[in-house]
Length: 287
Image 1 (spheres, rainbow, N blue to C red):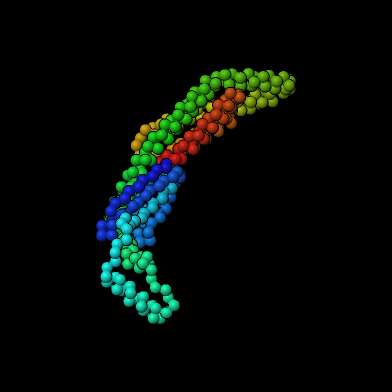
Image 2 (cartoon, helix red, strand yellow):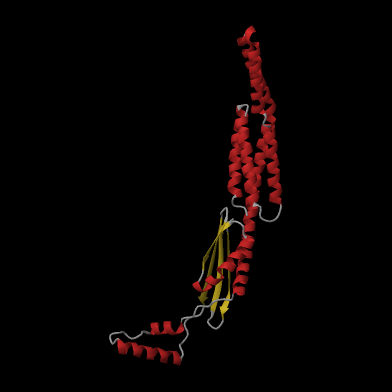
C-alpha cells in the first residue's frame, strides 16, 4: 500500500540545525527498503531495516534522512580569521600566483557546520514516529481497498449463485444429448453389436458424469470466498493469505469453465475469472 510520513525535530541547538526523516511507500508484493541518508548515518542502516521489518510486510519503502542548517552564517571568531590568514600566507608563499580568498570563501570555510550524527536511540525514535504516521496512512488506504475487494467478492458470490441455478437446466440438456447418443449407438450396433453398444453407453455415461459435476467446484469457490471475508474482518496483515485464496478461486473458476455443460455456464465461468483477476490486482496491494 502507498503512504507518506515526515517528521522533523531540532538536532543541534548550538548550530541551529534540524534533523528530518521521510518515509515513502508504494505498492509491492514484497518488502523492499531503500535508504537515502547522510553517509555519517550509514552505521544505523541495519537497526533501521530491522525496525521497519517488524512493522511492514509489503511495499517498496524509501527512508530519506537529512540534517539541515536553519540559521544563516554567523560571524567567524577572531581566532578563526587569524588561522585562515596564516594559512593563506603560507599558501601564497609557495604559490605566489594564488588568488586571495574572497569574503564568501572565508565565511564558507569558517562557518560551515560540521556533520551532525544523531545517536542511534534518537534516530530509531524518530523513525518509529514516522512509521506510526505511515501506518496510519496505509490503514486508511487499506480500508478503501478492502471495500473495493468486498464489492468484487459480492459480484463473484452472485455469479456463483447464477451458476448454481443454471446447473439443473444444464444437466437436463446434457441428459437429452446423452440419451440421443445412446439411441444412436444402439441403433447402429445392430443385433450383433449389442455388447459394443452397451460398452459405448458406459463410456458416454462416465464422460457425462465427469463433465457436468461442477457442484463441488462451486462449493469450494464459496468456501474460499468465505475464508477471504473472514480474513478481511480480522486485524493485522493478511495480504499473503488473500493471495493464496485468490489463486484457489482462479483454479475453481478454470475447472468450472472446462466442465461447463452449456454456453451459459461458460460465460459465467469467464465472468468469474475476470472478477477474480480484479480481486487479485487489489489484493496484491493489501498489507
